[in-house]
Image (cartoon, rainbow, N blue to C red):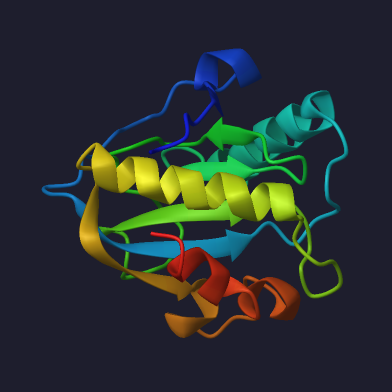
Length: 167
């Protein structure tokens, strides 16, 4: 039985409106795991501040239409809606039109991802499959698999198989 997934909505964390929103043409074929490479957040209010700051950076400094990721997850396992389901992200250059981008809030070159965050992302992936947003045979990647980057950090990359095994 699928566990319910609770997601802090864009409205709840105070998102700015996207400049443009392009929808995926079909269920995402791939899920791409990222880290934000900034300090991890300790509370929902801290995480909401970080998500808002990431959106501001992505839109104002990088020229994105919105926050780059579809979803983000804090160390306590709380999920945050980025672009959301069925929307083309801006998270892995050349790989956004058939993928879902999920960012762990923190720097996982140094930190180990929490069990709560991993469990929440497993449930998010399962929910995406059961609701038709993610292809049942989707492929899971770390951002480094698709580009020249350390993302999602060595300690998160090392446990990606735990996310693959769950769906």
